[in-house]
Length: 141
Image (cartoon, rainbow, N blue to C red; front, top):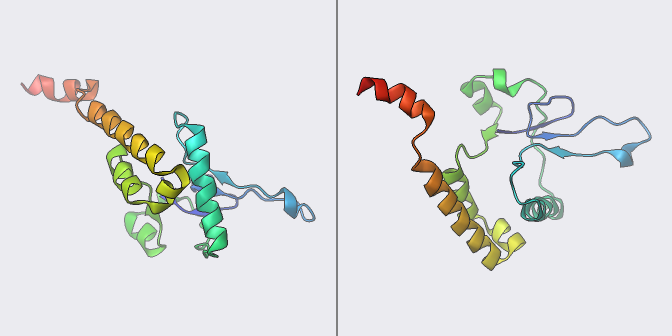
C-alpha cells in the first residue's frame, strides 16, 4: 500500500532480504504489490520496464524505512515522503492512462485494451450493492 522499501520490514512495498557477506550476487528483491489475480505476463513486462528505466536513468532510491508504516500517522508518512499506491481501481486506471512507461512496455494496442477491460471491471464493481450496504442502510429505510 505504501511506496517504501526496507531490508527487514515486511510492511514495505519493496523488501530487499538480507544476504550473507560474500553472497552479494544472491541478493533478491521482493515487490509485494502485484495482485494474485493480475495477468503475470503484463505485470512482469511493466515491472521489468520500470526497473530497467530506473537503472538506465540512475534513479536514486529514497531512504530505507524500517519502522512499521501502518503504525505511522499520515503526518509522519508525509514527513518521510512516503506516498501510497492508488486507493481504488478507478485511481489506478487514471494513472495507467497517463503512464508513458506502461504504454511503451505493453504497446499501445495492449495498453488501450487493458484500460478498456479495467474500465468495464470498475463499472461492474461500482454498480454492485454490497452486503455491507444492505446491512447498514436497509434497516434505516
